[in-house]
Length: 405
Length: 230
Image (tube, rainbow over all chains, first blue to last red):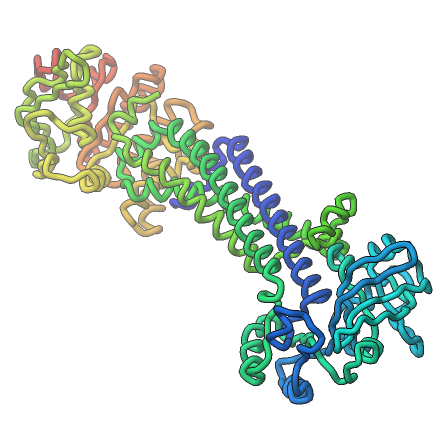
């Protein structure tokens, strides 16, 4: 009966109840969509960071970290390669020779990191081969091929098949110069990365730096399950105690920072929304109580105790939230479903976003947990918001309440 | 019929101290009402009759004195116990009917029995019996807004009787009714009183009610001026 009474009570003033239901629904819709947008952005950012730059984990000679000299390569890479190949948690890995130098044309030059890659293995590890805007990904038989970023190409004024000169030190610290042909121009979602990295074949770089082809400065590793990154990192580190094994969170702390900052802003946003909702509900329910004082007095007079009155008001509030909440969640689910496939194109702000390494197309995504969390938060908010009006109701004295108009 | 005392007030005083000048609404009222009475408490506006009725109904506390209902001193009860006591022992009929607008006539009558945790069969039978007794057998599923004032007050009487209370307190029950409705209502209450020995206590200044009452207690300036048994 309490449920029936509460349900009918909320429809006494249809307009007011509908306004509350709609505001709860719209609020949840907007909140969930913002959460999904944020989540999509975080996921994009982290995935881009992993797929373009860091992979899940990397292995270096510990000295290479501080002083990127060619001589600080990884000793006994065969052992590490064997360890990685035999570890069931590891998906793929590639090896790199790293150097830094200058890429130049007759007009101008530009400082870059030179990444000597195993082109086949790299294809499995990074998305470089998919990010080409012109040219091909290291065509067969072409020696001294180089992939450069779009920004670098623009700065140097080069196109596909243009010749550029790479200048760098060899392992004996002798300056070496070599001509390379631009066979591919790439563009990732991170403008900084594109400006600072060029890719050549590992064999070419080994030859020019007088290092054996088997030299490895960097292992880039992908694990099968992203949740296992930290445990795998620790395991590899234990297996290769003389090397430095680092996960993407350590290699690129901005990824972790971005994630935590975004989470923080989500919590703030959710809290602000819930606070606004609390006051909206308090206002509505207080009005509902005050205009029913005489009736509440009568209910107490004929024998409805304070606990039942209290729960009736809480139930009325909860019912409003139970109608508005699912509407908002459903709308959000539909909107996220519609936008997640093709993404939301923000290319109008693309340049600015790429400076921060954020993709210009955001694919909103929200897991079931977020829907449930917001749903639960709404119910909790409704219950909390109903406490004040409900207390107001039970504090009424029947004799005074009955006298009220 | 045995003359059980249902209501007994002893040295009842009620003073309101809310304003600078205290208002003495009730000044030493000693009355006894026995089972089966059909009693009207009469008096002009401000005489203290409503205050007296509120105290008898356990809705208000006396400043002094005690009120004993069927042997229970109401001042000894805590607020929630008092609510339970009212639920099981006192039936209320209000001047402006005060039905629950979102419930039908049947549900309004059933409501107190639900609070008493009576089973469905019992509730349903009694509701039917009471609504039939007040002449509303065709209005079970009608909400109060669709009933006339007289019909609403008859539902209120049925509701007041539903929990099988010790007595019915009716505060100016005919004040908002036309003469036909008043006559109908008084007929129903008089019949219930005579046939089922239900005790009725009214506060009223309606001459039509006073004429039908078998005992008339006149209150003026918070005191009992006269107590006439016809």
